[in-house]
Image 1 (cartoon, rainbow, N blue to C red):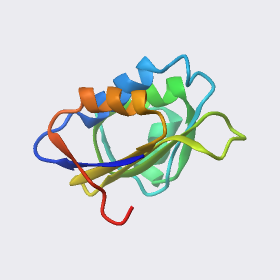
Image 2: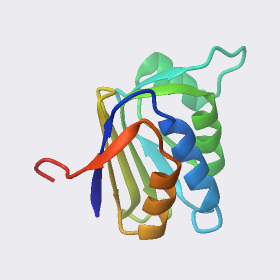
Image 3: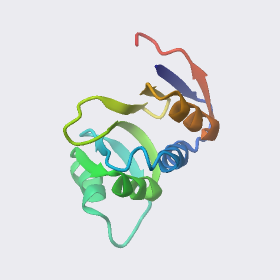
Length: 136
């Protein structure tokens, strides 16, 4: 199932994603999260950045992290402007549990076969309205 969320105002996108993944922590304990290269993410200023944050922020490189590392990254984010995030069950599994794309701060596409996860995300998200995805 693919859902498009049009941003209608200031959103809590990063917080909604963080809290949803935390809720499903037990199911996602061994998961691998990939943030594709060239992500445009604004981070809070901090004295010590993680290697993943430095790679995303300074090098615009792709990063692959486990769930606790990704939850920390989300906590350090101010805004996801343009990014593609994929959550897989494990390193060797190519099927995504969650595929999350933010496009130019105007909308997000969320794909998952887990209806409970989608409902959890949607119930936490503010500043966006659900619409049908174009061409997906």
